[in-house]
Length: 281
Picture (tube, rainbow, N blue to C red):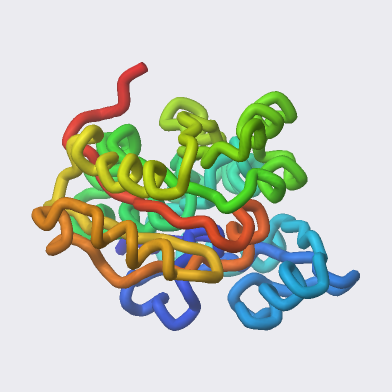
């Protein structure tokens, strides 16, 4: 049997574990000098109150690695293969730590997915399509999918990405120039955050984002995941501008968990989808 673990940066909620057939390793969030487990003992309302009203800047840290090893080895000891999909190693050290922890375990496969949030959901969906096949085939299916995943978003501000160390000072200053609306994406090469465009005006930005599904040759045999932080209003308008042929593939809005929202900031929104073509420079 194949078991799958993700961390909470996947935005798979605790109540969605059975739906996706995964186990979740919660990242830790430090807020108001108190440590919380993402998605376990910190509500979205509490998180955004601290972020917006109290102007707190949360920090994230690794899951409990002692607990992670115990949970994973329970399945290994009963003969199961385990696939672990933490968020991109360019964004978090969770991958590197887990890789070191399990590098001598032949039945544990730690994947550098070069992705976050809904991108990991798409990987899990692909695993679930092939769970009854040999582990080698499932691992190859994952590698085939990774360069096709696209994550593109418009943050309300680049401040949170910059303060969290996910964006360089040069990109931060360039994005804030002339109050341009920045487009960010997860880089398919290294899994880091990159700024791919800057547009003057909200309406123009929305139209350009809606058109990404066309320019990136979206594959509607996979789900399209509209994603947001805090306020879904922008998504409503974005979808109204999106070509009708893509709407049948859209699943319910994904309100991103605190582990990611604390870096994207409130008011970010975008699409996560699969392209028909692998990423090319």
